[in-house]
Amino acid sequence: METKKYSSYAEIDHDLKILKVEREIHYQKILLTIDKTKETFMPSKTVSFVGDIYQKATSGMLGTILKIAVPYAVNWYINRKRGD
Image 1 (spheres, rainbow, N blue to C red):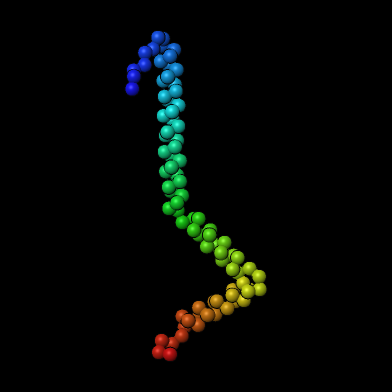
Image 2 (cartoon, rainbow, N blue to C red):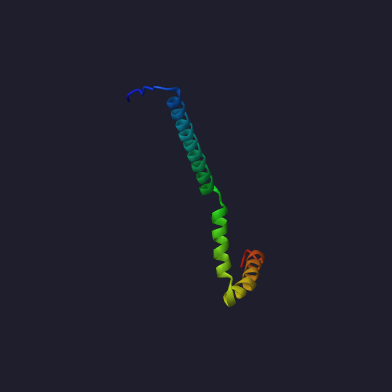
């Protein structure tokens, strides 16, 4: 890389301002990457996805029947005798 020769302080000041803006852009890109990485590890998207599936599965007539039948089935399974 060739060294740049400046003829005035205004040119130096201009290049320093450009470098400062470029540094801030890179810093913000790093912060954005960190935030995206955090979001991928957060379970909130998975929980909302499961909630959407549950809502779709429990809507309508079949959903009403499932909402009534599942607690009875779980209760029966928990309270059944172990030797049977």
